[in-house]
Amino acid sequence: MQDTENTELKPVATESELLLERPEDGIAVVRLNRPHATNALSLSLQSALSHTFHQLSHDDSVRCIVLTGGDKVFAAGGDIKSMDSCGPIEILKRHTERVWAPIETCPKPIIAAVNGYAFGGGAELAMHCDIIIAGKNASFAQPEIRIGIMPGIGGTQRLVRAVGKFNAMRILLTGRPIAAQEAQIMGLVSMVCEDDQVQHEALKMARQIAAMPPLAAEQIKEVVIAGMDASLDTALMLERKANQILFATQDQKEGMNAFIEKRPPKFEGR
Image: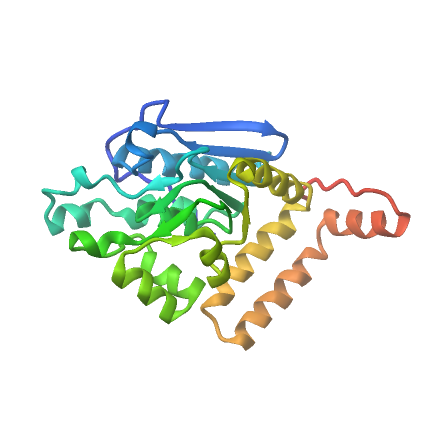
């Protein structure tokens, strides 16, 4: 995956807007922290996310990332006030595709832990992740059409790939939210649990993933994402080649030996 670090956005987030936590070995928690603005994705917060994910992508001690907005809200969209008076050239020069690239291309598995609203840019941020765990009262929406625009950070393209054309069109053209359980049925959400268990379940799953061989996890993520837009024959070839490469790793030897010896494996990412 490409190495891209954002240099486009000038505003810098204050330390409290984005929190980075290391609760356990191998796990990083990235926490949006603008509760006064329902975690709206300001330019400074987007820049901080970009920088943080660039750093985590290159941190060998990190094997899984949890992205959350906390117990009340994930992110209720972009910062509309910062866009109200913008013209097309100013929007173009923001280069959001470069800003969000470190999240999109992050080789580490990312779990979105969603409570409350994931609207607009918040839903798009969740869709940049690999697994979405949502509370029963969480909801997802792409309401951009209601203010005369449309999703611009992948909402149309990632959503249709997740839920299909007809569900995506309903969400995009009405702007109305869907509940977590409906989102799970559609294929947008991986798992639904009680609201007060979202963070716990996300960390539990992150712990399971962090215990796996990290090179295998990275190859699985890369092949799944690349294969989605390839023909089946090409995707199967990518899968075969990635699997073959993993037989050169020490973790493959450790995993198979541990299985034969009936002991827990210890994966070191080699």
